[in-house]
Every structure is written in structure tokens, then in C-alpha cells.
Length: 522
Picture (cartoon, rainbow, N blue to C red):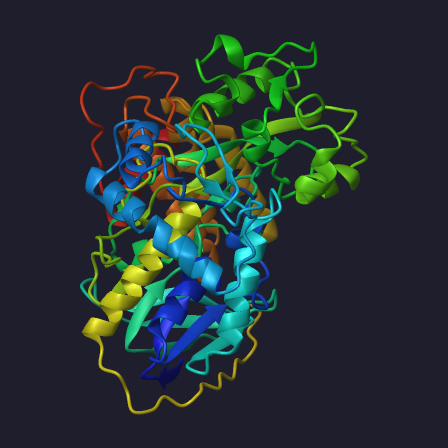
């Protein structure tokens, strides 16, 4: 294996968290590992809602933190919620200074939207549903002017070099389908910011590459993974057969859109006092129940929004148009789809993982902010806050080099890549057995299938990262014998009394459980 050593900080990922961390590390030299061209394939760019922050004089970080804790179904770390919400305003102002074109009122204030489980309007947005794309545009423009950052496009991380206590490097390959001989890159620090795991599911809103690889890589190196069972399903993925499914932003419901079924019945009013603006887990389960009953749930924007959807929510309108839907005249068919992973690499307030030399931020990390159910539009906020925290901590703990030459990687082809059929089977297994509603029998069946898939494809690191994360999600879901937030067990429908426990899980323990179940089922 080719070995390269650099004094640069190595950032795995190229989404919002990765870019923001790189900017905050400047002028410290950084190399970013980006599987796709910069700005392509990152979940951040697909985010529609915006950034949650107490920008209204009548709002406060304390109220924002209280909503976060309440939405998280008893599993939020209150200290983390306070830490993040106190920093929210500063980050919105920072993004504004960097050129993000947030929607503004005539007097110069920020246009604020209300989304599910918020007690008031506090989501700063861009053109209704383009916040992620606009924030990424501004950050990428700044990044291209930052000489300390080198971006290795077309490169993916597949494994960490670790002795079980400390991470010393990252193994890279080419990211195209042909695969390549690996290259070991050792840097001054390793920061994981490569996204979550929604793409492990057959029905998802995540970009195609977001399939738990970064979380799996950390787990295989020995890092603790927290809250793995808590996968958030977005209630209003547009149900038109696309993979990934287009998203109908929650801001539509914030503007008055309602959920109906094929009979025209508005079903959320009988299920929760907040109706369509109930916490996401409640709405997702209601959508799932309507789908299972063959009642075809739909989002009706006609009365509340009407023709405004075409100009104020252009991404949604475009998704409808390419599938022959007219949202001005027709309700939009929707389904619950894997959207955001509250779980991930367990970190502290500095973004440090449980292995020395390793940090994580963004959706790849589990900070304790989201608990069992992420509050709407807290995802981008968490990425910003912890990207800066990681950058500051890395800067304190690594020397500033006099120089760091740019890297030149020479990959040799070897044909190794994940088997598409195996990936398809894995994704369908997760949707069928580890989805919106789970039970013990289905979870055990999923673990047995995952064991067989990994056994049949032992040589591909990229696939083993996927199966590692899928195993952690499934094992954690089997071990949590209650229903809490996004984790719903039909065989354990009650929520345990008291605050929800957070139970970090190591891959070795999840694999032991998986292997025993697979053995019992043969």
C-alpha cells in the first residue's frame, strides 16, 4: 500500500460541516476528501428547511433549547442543547457575512418560518426551500479563495488506521466504480464529516453516496457509536418512485399545507394537538400507517399556498413538474423516507471521538443534541456549531506547520467496488425490517441477512462500512425494548419512565449479537 504523510489536517467529507471546519481551521493547512466534485452529492446542499436560530426579539436560545429537549423525547443532552442554541445566532450572522442570501423582510430582518415542534417561527430560510444549496454556494465560494485548503475530488475514505486507541491515518481509494489500490494517508488530525446513513434504506431522501460509510469506518476502527437506533424518517418525501425521493420541505406545512388521504380526509387533526406540525416522528408514523392501509397520503398545498408554491418553493415545484404533478391544482403524494441519522460517532462538546486523534461533526457525529427525534432545522445548525468546535480543538492540539506541500495521489486500478445487487438487498432489508415501525422478529431477521451479506462480500471495505453501520442501527434497535421518538417498536409500544438513556455501542458487541442471532437462525 502506498503511504503518504502530510502535516495537513485530513477532513473526510465535503458538505457543510467539512467546508465550515476547513474555513475555521485556516490558515492551518487542510486536505479534504471529496468523493464527488465539490458541491455535488452532499446532503447539506439538499437541505430545504434552513437553520434554526432565535433571531426574533421575542424568542430566546433558552426557548429554542427547551423545544429541542421536548422534541427529543427525553434523550437530548440538555447541556448540548444549551451550547448549540446559544451559538445559533452567531452562526447565522457569520453565514450572512460570508454571502449567504437568506430571505429578508422589507426592514432588513430575517424571514422566519415555523416548522414542526418549534414553539414559534425561528427557521432562517432561502427562497422557501433552497437554504442548503445557497449556504453551500456561499461556503464553496469562500473555500475556493482559501489557499490553505486542498480538495481531493474523486477520492473516498474507506478505512481508518488505528490501534484501537488512536487513529493515525485514513485509507483512500478512487471513488469511481472501477475502484483502485488503496493509499494510506497520515495527517496531523483526522476529522470525519462525511454525512449520515439514510441511503442505507431503499426509501430515502439522501444523496446516493450517503450510506453510513463514515460511521462504519469509525466503528470498525473501535470508536463508540451513540444513538444508532434513532433514524429519523421524513414524513413528506414526494412519493413518485424516484431514488432518492424528492423532499417536500416542512416549511410547506409551516405555511399551512395540510395532510390528507385519497378520500380527502385530513388525518393529523385527530392524532396530535399540533396536527401537521407535530414532531416528525408522530407525523412520519401517521403517514406510514396511511400508506400501509392503502389510503395514499398526500400533502395538500392548494388552499394555503396555491400558485405561490411555484416561486416560493421552486425545488418542490420542479420535482412535481418532472413527475407530471401540478401542486397548484393537485395534492402531492408523500411517503415516510429515511432522512436523518440522530446516531453516529459519539463525541464530546469539542467534537472529539472516543479514539485519540479523531474528531467528528455533522450528521456523522452523535453529539446528544437530537436525542430520539431531531427538531426540524437543527441539523444544519449542529453541523455549523460542531464544525467550529472541532476546528478550534484541533488547532489547540496540533502544531501549526511551517509549510504543507500539496498532495498528489496516484491511484492504481484494481476493480474492487461494492456489488450493486448486494447494496440493493441491504437497502431493502433496512426498509423492510428496520424502518418506521420495527419489531423483534424483523430486527433479528435483518441481522441474519446482514451477516450473510457481509460474509459473501468480505473484501470490499466500502461495503463493510455500510454493513457495519446497518448492523449497529439494527442491533441498537433490538436492544432498546421500548418506543421512544423515531424508534418505534410495535412489540414494545410503551416508553420507559424517566429520561431516555443514551447507550453507546461498539461494533464488536453489535457483531457478537448479530453472529449469535445468525447462528440461532440457521
